[in-house]
Each structure stands twice: as C-alpha cells, then as structure tokens.
Amino acid sequence: MSSQIPPASPFSGKYALVTGSGRGIGRAIALHLARLGADVAVNFFRNRQPAEETAAEIENLGRRAPVIKADVGDLDDLNRMFDEVEANFGGLDIFIHNAASGYNRPAMQQKPKGWDWTLNINARALLFAAQRAAPLMERRGGGAIVSITSPGSQRVLPEYVVVGASKAALESLTRYLAVELAPQNIVVNAVSPGVVETDALAHFDAIRSDEHLIEKAIAATPAGRLVSPQDVANVVAFLCTPEASMIRGQVIVVDGGYTLPAR
Ligand SMILES: NC(=O)c1ccc[n+]([C@@H]2O[C@H](COP(=O)([O-])OP(=O)(O)OC[C@H]3O[C@@H](n4cnc5c(N)ncnc54)[C@H](OP(=O)(O)O)[C@@H]3O)[C@@H](O)[C@H]2O)c1
Image (cartoon, rainbow, N blue to C red; front, top):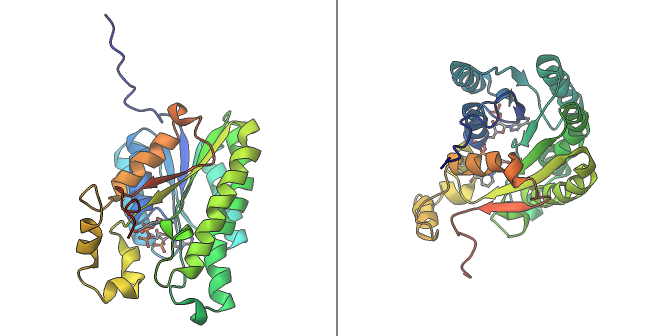
C-alpha cells in the first residue's frame, strides 16, 4: 500500500513578495514561505536593519531574498517595488499585502492627512499592487494574493476609526479582485488575525494604559492563548496552495475564537 507523503517544499521554485516583512507578522510570513521553498522579496519602509535580518535568514535557507525599500502608500514607490521584483524574479506567484500603518486617535480628532496616509497604505496599495502583480502572475500561469486585515473592519475598536475604515475597504477590494482576477487563475483572499503580540500594539494608548490588557485578551480567547505571527503565516501559506484554490474573496478569521462570544 502506498502512503502519500506531502512534498516538503510546496513552494519550491515559486516567487513571493511580502510587504512590511522586516518585522512582526510580515516577517513570520516571509520566513514561512521561504521554509516552504519560495524565494521571497522582503519589503520595508523605515527600518532597513530588521529587513536585512529577515533576508539573511531566508538566504540561510538557500533561497533568494532581495530587499526592497518602498512606501507602499506612495504610487511611485509601489511601482518601483514591482519593477525591482520583476528585475529579480521575472514573474511573481505570491503577493502578500501585509504592511499597514495608521493614525490611532478618536474620530473627532482625525485629520484629512491621517485619512489619506492610512487609506493609501492599507487599502489603495492593494488595488494598484494588484494591477502590477497580475501581469507578473499571468506569466507564471496564475498566482495568489493575500492581504492582512483586522477585526476593526467590522467591529469598533478604541481609536481605530481610520484603520478600521481602511481595512473595510481592503476586504471589499479583496472580493472585487477575487472575481476580476479569477480568469487569470489568480486567487485573492484576506486573513484577519486577532490580537497578535507585535510592535504594532505599542501604538495603542488603550494597551499602554492597561498593563493587563494582553492577559485580558488571553483570558477572553477560547483557544487560551494569543494568536502568534506563525499562526497567521500558516493560514496565509495555505491560501497560496492549490488545495485552497476554491476559497475566493474570503476573509479568514484567525483569532482563537476571540470574536465569537457576545460581550
Ligand atoms: N498585531 C496585531 O495584533 C494585528 C491584528 C490584526 C491585524 N494586524 C495586521 O497585520 C499586519 C501586520 O501587523 P504587525 O502587527 O506585524 O505590524 P508591525 O509590527 O507594526 O509592522 C508593520 C510593518 O509594516 C511595514 N510598513 C508600515 N508602513 C509601511 C509602508 N508605508 N510601506 C511599506 N511597509 C510599511 C513596517 O515596515 P518598517 O518597519 O520598515 O516601517 C513593518 O514591517 C497589518 O496589516 C496589521 O493591520 C495586526
């Protein structure tokens, strides 16, 4: 009787680009895709050193890892990033829109500059990145696009109004792109993690002012622990496999059940 052993490197020979992959969740995704065999372009905006460290880890696995500085909220930068991907890889199989930023403050204190900044990085970048990624993926016979969203797209979190609106736009774009890019064999989805302990949490006053907030989040999570960057990376990678190819335009929640109980 023959037993089927899954291939150790399902992404062997594949080319990936992960935005904001020097730190946090993006770094975990980039490393995971590389462990599964992909060459991964590492994008950063302000912090070169962690991006170089992520790239060095990927190269230690025997994969290629060009490091590309680009503000994904700036269309010239975004286009240059894809020019560099094309110059390095000649095509693209996996695009992960992970980078995010935002002005965390109450709605009454928001300013147009903060809205533009946040929406451009978190939502607009996906639309114009998809325009560049799709032709590179078509050359490879198709591909996968996964964005990282957040529960704040639908639920009301403290000081999260503009990021929440940007994530709602991101999820809507995910559905439209899933339909429009389907004929090119490009699969488009999003992953919505619960609370993940990364540098991002330090930007929230609500977290700074309550040293027990993480413990409270753990206590409120049916799975009994916080979501790790690796938990997110595992699901993102799955969405890029042929086994997930009938999942289209969905937002997959990875929160250990945090958002399930009525509070
Ligand atoms: N942490 C959570 O609890 C949580 C929960 C739900 C969803 N998420 C989502 O998960 C994703 C990653 O979050 P994280 O917690 O890992 O964030 P993080 O630790 O704050 O890291 C943010 C990353 O995005 C990059 N970035 C920021 N602005 C950029 C820009 N304009 N262009 C290119 N890169 C940019 C940063 O690069 P530099 O270091 O070079 O600036 C950094 O690598 C985000 O989409 C976030 O909304 C996080």
